[in-house]
Image (cartoon, rainbow, N blue to C red):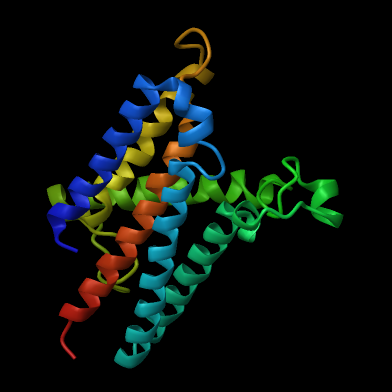
Amino acid sequence: MPFGVTVVLPLVLFLAFSLALYLRPDLRLTVLEGELGVLENAQAAVLLVALIAALVLVARARAAGDRGLTVWAILLALGSLYMLGEEISWGQHYVGWAAEGWFARVNDQQETNLHNTSAWFDQKPRALLEAAIYAGGLLYPLVTATTGRLRVARPWWLMPTFAGFTAALLVLVTILPEWLHLFGFGQGPKPYRAAEQQELFIYMFVFLYTLSLLRRLGSRPA
């Protein structure tokens, strides 16, 4: 994917959803944010292509004999699979079954997923991922580009490049209204669930980071 697309695509998605959420608030719950709404399906689609990209990366890293990258790519694939499965409640929202047994007792939204059963499957790993995106997707590219310092040469595949910078910036931008509301700025109900839109750009960052690894691996000497 060309570098320009990695900048434009997240911005287009951000503007499209933001305008829709603010201009047509009546669509928020039924169309934009419902479990089968546009936003939720966009999240699932991005995670699906991220999973495919990670699996391709696993195959190419193995062919290149890079064991470290192979393990890292497997972790990316497993993470993408987990997030995709959890996002669609492992098919529940599409097939329409009811949560039963342990999920019915523990899941606070009566869904067949883990992230609504405990903070250890939702808020805590999400906070770690957000922190990694802010540090690696925002600060690291800026610091290395402006100062030439802190550059990680080994392993070459660990740190992100500017390919995911726009998506990383939108991870921060989209959650700011919720943070401001939490600290008492702004009156009345929140116009939308900022965390839902933020999730789209978290997944977009994972996808673009994986694509950048594929591109960098292909450009490395054999």
